[in-house]
Image (cartoon, rainbow, N blue to C red; front, side):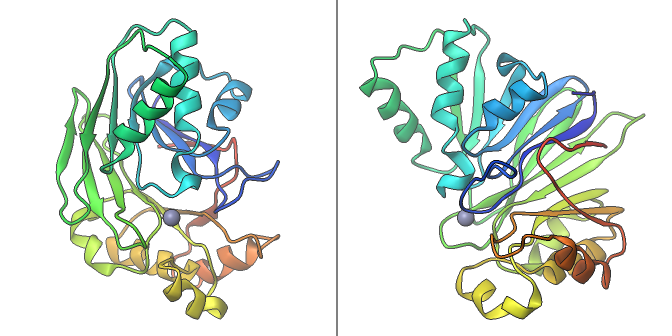
Length: 259
Ligand SMILES: [Zn+2]
């Protein structure tokens, strides 16, 4: 993948299908690959896009619904089989460390590299990564289980993009002060307004909700994804969002977006 770009590995909600795997993305910032969520099959999409498994430097997991992390144990196992030695850092909710370690232990897998974990706080935005060319802040969201988004801020003078990854959440305008100045926002859009009742019951957002967040943040671009399986054609979601925020696109697996 190209430097300073976003690669979509999975764009669906809940259940993967051959066209849309579940949520996973890679953001490359000046050569550093950050994996955001890791749905089933993320490593398959990486293979088909020619991204080396061991080129992943950091992993950010938003929450512990399976469609956002069931690919992680397999990915870590492949990293080990491909002789990874460089450390791996995972930013994640409480309990993920135990889940992964139990899977590795049950299969008598001993990692040949250091795997460390930083727990995210679902209630408060925190600076969780300070790297040479970027910073990452957690973004508290409101979902059925503890969930955070992630706000990647490039600190390079020539490439000052700021990418907000807003994972599963009910409409939550109080994230706006946290992600203000975002140039590009990914926001889940599981439903359209027609299904607002279901969105509220399931702590998800509509396409219009996503567009309102992008508008109030003054973002340049909005990406929507995590679509309910009832939408075979995503244009209905995109059109709803565009009524509020024109520069909206629906993400698709293997799409690469320059930042
Ligand atoms: Zn979820």
